[in-house]
Image (tube, rainbow, N blue to C red):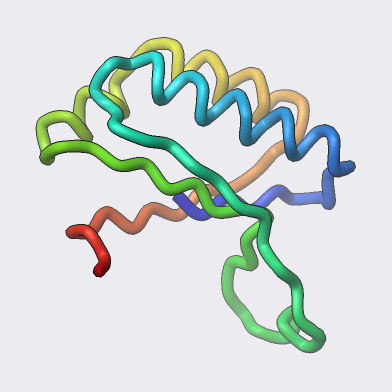
Length: 100
């Protein structure tokens, strides 16, 4: 999950968002792990006409069925709606097989 907030968030706010997303995903019972990291900015990246991440959230599940169940969890949508109302953001997804 590639997260890009419309405006730069204070560190504490971004940390709380990431903690909320990780927590709610793990609470689904179908997610094996949920970890996140902040984007590391580099000079000149703002010239790239693409989504620039605020953070990456990696969610590990056993299979495609668990992935679908995780995304349909009501708690996830509550967290997303609450954060979207406070700090609008965009998300890009990259569902893939495990990287070695």
